Length: 333
Ligand SMILES: Nc1ncnc2c1ncn2[C@@H]1O[C@H](COP(=O)(O)OP(=O)(O)OP(=O)(O)O)[C@@H](O)[C@H]1O
Ligand code: NI
Image (cartoon, rainbow, N blue to C red):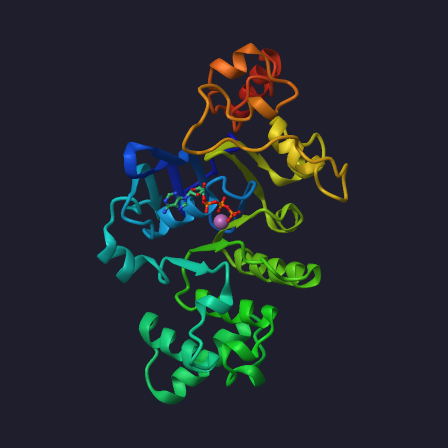
């Protein structure tokens, strides 16, 4: 097994997914390039990287929610059968969003309908996505759905603006869980929450993964990723540069890609040493490695030659030939 592949049938299998925004004047923005990863049942994959690196665009591509000027290539196969990139809006709206992919939104307050109570929204979603019928049965199912996301029953008749950030997040999670989707997709589910609530939110999401769902969590909160993820995918300038098991990535021996190492070293609880410089414009990417301009290890080759993504890594320096050979041998065994 290599780190970019999960063993057994994947819930989601993304192959060479690219997203280009066609801009006026013929310019292209390469928001996502050749993303390749899969997520297995019961597994949590955290997609991490700095603001603007393409994480949300990747999520929107999976949900069929990209704007009209976006062009996608590659494939993203859900449940071994449906390619999300070619399925078409009708299929995505009727059979995928909510039913096969539960979306835990970035901004729950904005996702919830402001003029309706949490109970009303849960009941409406239940009627839409499940076979539960009859006022009493729907009411009971809504209360169960709230309990599943640890949303307190005595707050069900409140409106979204009457909820704290943490409770709004739980209401949104309860809605995301109603369709019993095998894949949960959470884009920055902890934005704006204090540390305590971040931990509770990710622990609750983890619990749903432990029930057998797959979870793709998008975050730039590395502490949250460390707490929840089985594997980590690091994105830089639209490309995944490293995919690794969370244990060795956050512990020893640590990340293999210099950018991923830089991200961890920048954490206040580690070296608190920011990566110098800025990421490149996605409309004007360099020919070689996109990280070369900021990388202490970069040499002439890095600026001219793009590193291939093999064995979970896209870097000229990450592995010596010998280590690579040994790892590959172990992976193939
Ligand atoms: N509709 C669009 N047209 C053109 N460019 C876009 C469009 N939507 C997003 N982009 C560009 O795609 C890039 C990636 O954006 P994205 O929102 O995926 O970043 P992100 O990694 O999710 O960042 P954050 O952590 O801030 O949420 C950005 O440079 C953004 O400007
Ligand atoms: Ni985003």
